[in-house]
Image 1 (tube, rainbow, N blue to C red):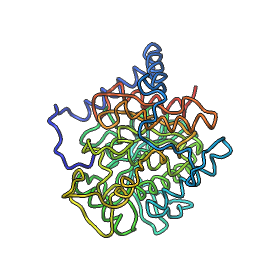
Image 2: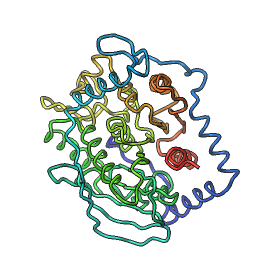
Image 3: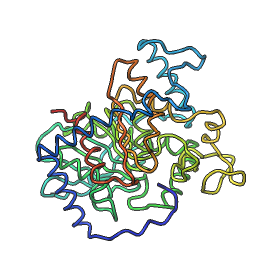
Image 4: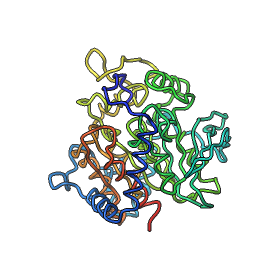
Amino acid sequence: MLTGKPPRNRPRYAPWFLAAIGLLISSANAEDPASREEVEQRLAKAYEPPPEFAGNGGPYRSPLVFADGQRVKSADDWPRRRAEILALWQRRLGGWPALVERPAVERLQTVEKPDHVQHQVRVQISRQGQTVDGYLLLPPGKGPFPAVLVPFYEPLTGIGQGRKGQGTHDYGLQLVRRGFVTLSIGTPGALESIGVDTREALVAAGERERRQPLMLLAYVAANCHTALAQMPEVDPQRIGIIGLSYGGKWSMFASCLHEKFACAVWSDPGIVFDERNANVNYWEPWYLGYDPAARRKPGVPSEENPRTGLYKELVEAGDDLVDLHALMAPRPVLVSGGTEDPPRNWRALHHLIEVNRLLGHDRRVALTARPTHVPTAEALELELSFLESWLKPR
């Protein structure tokens, strides 16, 4: 999360050691039939809310109600309601610019790895020529392959070359070893810049574009989707997105606002507002708190440091992110929950389940639970297996 908190003390291991352990775990899980069956059973259970939350929509408003108060009564009504929700969120966030029709992808450097090819790339993300740095990993073979976009603070973590994340959220590396094309990207304008630099970059972008930063990140992801879809190595109908924490928020907004993403994994982003948890920090100006008329200090809202921007408008209106989630239907999504998305967040997902049921689909919404923010080995395996199940069905 972009909280400015110092990292907890953890044992330090060489990146090569952690990467090797991650490869051994993923290889064992992929090749051992008993392990695979166990993973599939756990994943199947992830689609089932626990009894205390089954059918419980909590305090959230149903997205199956038109703005004029009429109920959505059938699947035939849903396209009109979906268009209404999408237009509302685009207006809330400051407007959705036209996508780049054919984003340029510049391959800067190529490295042959034992089990994949790594390209350092620069991808066009706006019609004005702005770019984002990243790493494109290609599995052996001709394809076309399924693909996954991996957004994070910087792109090196996604390919297992960051300061941390090996074997926990190096999604690009893990997935290319399972036969996916992956594109790992970072915050535009920063290859390895994290923490306060990322915050400042997002706030500056919001001020420059007069839009909420999360909308801008979703727009970046949408153009990266187009870039992937136009590569001969990629099956354009099988492109997903996965991200942890900041990358989880990025993935959630991108997959909801750009329906061409075939499925998504939102790893512990905090899928709804929660001012009891300082890490579910949508109120910050680098997420939904951008306000051209006010600047607030970082931290949980209070009388001395009140809410600002779109976040303030949503909270005061009694709104949350549930109608945004509804835009995901009927595409599959896994909320890989940790400290920011505990099991009680099934109440918010209940409404997405109801939309899917209206459309005639079941088992499209899953939530897993772990005691940590960073994925455990088991959580990582479930995330990867979810993407395999929807993008690489047997």
